[in-house]
Length: 451
Image (cartoon, rainbow, N blue to C red; front, side):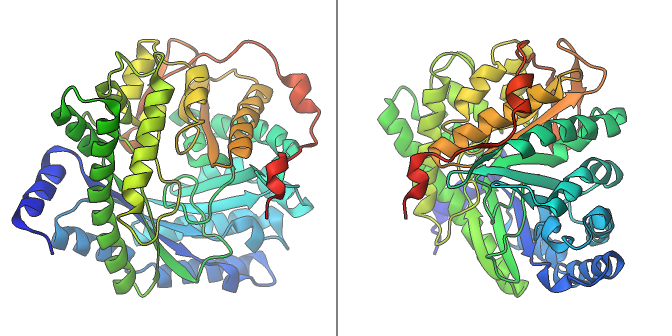
């Protein structure tokens, strides 16, 4: 039971500190939808998603009203589509379009799972599937795509990494009238997880049940406010405050997740503890780091501060939920965090520093706008670098960069809404063309043989 003080505290978190449930995501297995042909499979996929997710939006809206907690996004994730369309990979767009149409009819924000898992090698059907990604992302509104190119146990599939540099470039070009927005819906992973509720990288793993409810909580503003009230304490005390705050935030997520699963007759999957920022002032991970004592995010000490934050969030959240999963930690998407945006505009944060920070946080190089004329091999090299960090450290890393057509350093791009806006960051002028063109497999580290 909640006492009066806890109720008042929660109300203050919601009204003044941007506490919300960032997403309720329903995972749906599409394996029962496989038919002999693409049209029949697409029809089965459309019908199954409509039927199983029919109550998602009204249920989450009812929960939001009843508990007084904003639920920002309602999403669906599905089995990686490349597995569903393996017999007819060139016709995969039919399934992608069916998913996008179902998402529109349901009124959900995004649907993830136009995905492929190629971390050890790329089968012929997956090669054909990957080639469809740019056109599908350009022709759909809500559909998101992801590709897993590496893992700690398998190494990094550099042939896929090479190909994805070109896929990112083509996706940007096909959506150039919107600043390359198609790339905002494409994530390249190492160590992708099967229960991530956040877009654009969500998909429903083959090891999951028919349906599952995964919830992503968020509360950068709450953590920032708690640290501000702490005053001049040492870092040990600051970590304790973050832990206690993460516990409270996660409790709200657990409550919504279990109740949503019950009402939707789905399995309760996980609560993702990630601090996911928005462009709104007062909802920034960067500002938390600055509250810890940095003059600006990006200066020396940023990686250490982020490590403290990420670890404290996990420790506090794990105690509050019976099932923690997804990515869980702190996100640093440049265009989606007002503090990151401002630091980038002032030149106080660079791609190199962002890469260093990804070694200790939840994801990777996320929502970063780069010059439109960046070579495909350079984008592939960024993917390889992040995959290496994930592979060696046994953690999930990802790349979501946007080469903005027709724009360069000094320009900016505005995607609107939660996707935010960002200045174009410079990339290193050196070439990785020869390295990327070698292809092959970067072998897994020796600890990958641990059983």
